[in-house]
Length: 467
Image 1 (cartoon, rainbow, N blue to C red):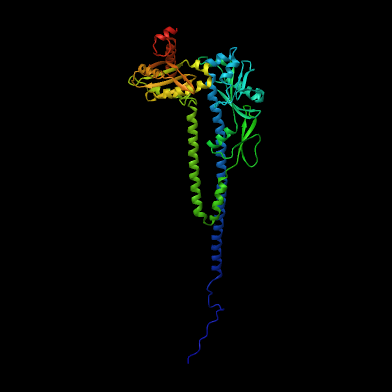
Image 2: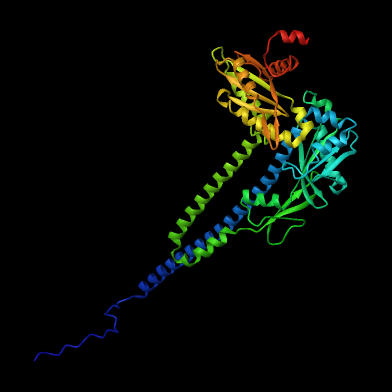
């Protein structure tokens, strides 16, 4: 037999262990690094998610606050357009400065349930109250914060021929107010600063707040006298800057809801984080596009006459300024100034509300000729302007428009017949729009003086007759 072999002593120095302390240390370090990176990533992802949650809440809160402020501004803007229509009115100026002012104001402005405004205050040249009606009933203007209204009237007198608007507190809540001095249409605005001042009021009642809530997507919107805790609040300030109320609504907290949905999936934070960031980015882009659309709509409405739907004076003048420089002998520009005959009798007989409905019906009938005109606008009162380009004979086109008024208008139970007088002026070269309007206006007044219900072309002889 051979010699028995014995195993070496594995505790001796001659045999190396399977895992050395250095390897254990290296593995521990690498493991710790990976754990530290994982923890850091978890903390970073958690911080980003929490920050995104707060950011989403803040963005939505700021959107809602901006939308609420835009809604109040839109209410004031609509009221300003209405007060301008009523202040630049020959008949109103004559009536308010006459002995029959009280009765005329009641018949024309003291109307109950009128959609464009709820109340009217007429101040005399000395600032004293001539008349005041709210919802068709006389009321004490002292119930409306007096000093801000006097400030509004003073600003209107010192303004640049534009309505002045703001908010005012009433005995029952808050109202939007717009003011402008009364004057004849052809009166120099600088000479009207001592004229009576017309102030229209629109009460911000529950119906108005509900419309704002629906149109501007502000759920739970309410009108409060004081700010509410744990809610978003927009201070409503009068013209002097003093708070008179608050629009309050709950924050939608879209970030919190998103966080609650994503919390169970934080173990896969990498993939979810990418998706979440893309969703937030997409939501921000869509929200930005939506707000831009709202701004575009607001700008569009600012250039429109709310009663007729046509361009208002500023919108029409802007269109005319675009057309005028492109005028050539081969593409002349004609401006038609149209004024209704007998419109004053309509207001005198059936009141201003019927007159407003008639204006809207007239606008519809004129719109039937829109294919022949590059721009159509209502300049105020019963005066319309129509811009024509091209070689179609303007006299024949004007006669066709006049003939369209031969069919009576039906307004409720009334059949009303009004005719139109048109003055038109043509230029074959670029001409200042204001000068073109002056010529067409002169021709229109010539048509009026010649017996109405006719069209008259501007001739240079009119300048000599005028002189």
